[in-house]
Length: 256
Image 1 (cartoon, one colour):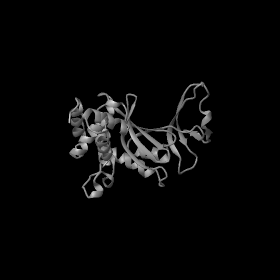
Image 2 (cartoon, helix red, strand yellow):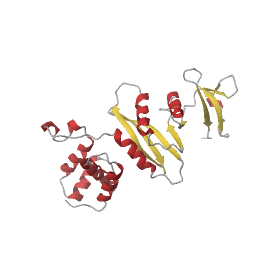
Image 3 (cartoon, rainbow, N blue to C red):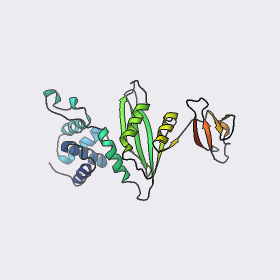
Image 4 (cartoon, rainbow, N blue to C red):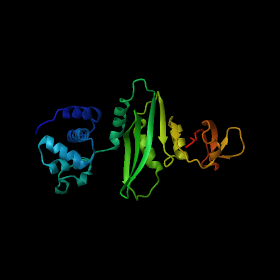
């Protein structure tokens, strides 16, 4: 089987950063990444067909090999016939992936931005991801995937993702947690602060706030005028005691 130039570098990179994977797992992961870079696509069929042409193999052979990499052990080829198969432990990869992503940050960078993202793929699944934001890119470092219709609280799943990365998160810099309004919640704010992180959460414009030293709540829509200057201030957010937060609000309202 021919070995295209560049594949060995990917194998060395995977072996260096993910040594906990077995040798076959490292080989297929390197093949995956090599194919994705060449194809500029991440779809299984596209990557497999391109790789098959390079390695002079059948398309179905590569499709099966790549698909088996992310399958559960019981669903891999040969498992039904009693062959021993090993599934990839994704949680064990989270910290090494974050450690690798940190090496991509500028040497003088003392701030790490972690972005929380929740996406639903139709009625199939929901994906929760923690990503490192760097140079206009977001690098997934920890994630979990569950059926879209699965019941259960989101909070334990998000806390589990943070726990996977806690030991690798820099202790001598500033860590910012970014979340859209669909994810942000009082528990997330409190959890971030407790872990020495700085929550930067997008919120809805509806809702009351009380400025520091004031006694009455005001609607957030009145904090800035359209086209006027931005505003920043310490406030009490939410009126109910169990949800109330003492935090800083940054507000801006463009003319458009």
